[in-house]
Image (cartoon, rainbow, N blue to C red; front, side, top):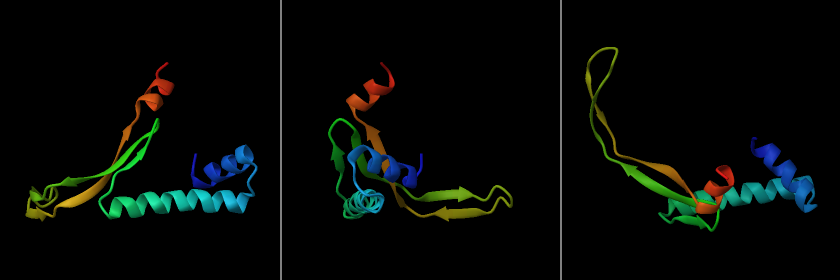
Length: 91
């Protein structure tokens, strides 16, 4: 399922117009992104938690040349599923 499919199904389930459903989906994604950018966790009870994890930098090697490279620290989004979501997938 992609974002358009999600908006279409939301439109069918909720009775919203397709444009309104697409705006709602985009709005939710934008809000989650902004919260993560500001360092907040997004907790959706029964679904899961979106959070940011930090990967430390270090040294690495280019596999083609063997040259040593420096890897910068970076932030990555992380999702931890909630209990109800896990139970729905594993009855």
